[in-house]
Length: 295
Image (cartoon, rainbow, N blue to C red; front, side, top):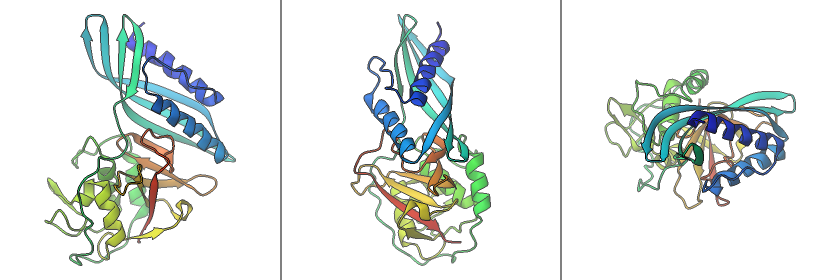
């Protein structure tokens, strides 16, 4: 049996386990953090009155290597979750880079090679330098269209990164005509020009502090609760709760109870529930910041 058939069978079994709410099948040395994340996903669905009624998985081969009896594969896993919550029906999607290993035709390892969230970086908060233009109208519809168009792809008009979450968010904001300021100082403002950009354009920690402090250009208002957000707004994540903000998502919709569904890059995701309890980066110490982008 080839790698595709083995993986298809494995992910079919996983989909059945998720839908039925049964314990996920263990596979060799497959990391337990993925099983724990899947269990949190199920609990999260139950807590908000949602159910996964269909899962489709597709593997896209990127590269392969063979050594004696072992075959190793890099691939993309495209997952589609059909979610039913009351009268609302929507599809959540993810694109994840993974690694698989087979020994004499048997699948012995399958794991993610992505970690959601950036490593801590020593970027100080910028404050407000009051340089540049004042905020102008934010075109949420254009920002949302961009977020939907590029959630699983990379716009060649921009630089892309292995850890691309905040870069993708900045592109969405830019598509919504959020005003830039601060060029050419990378530590100031929020901007991108040619092959150069501010830290806040690409670094989750820097964008979080920019949104808290900016009084001109791109501006945001922090709100207390996730259900205060509307499509076109931003959520920042500190997975470890240690003050280093590692991830950013873009609100594209709300579930039936009014809580955000988000798009994101790195593990490319569409219509994902905002809390990220299904992420392997999640910890009980997680902290969030909720930002309403000023129109």
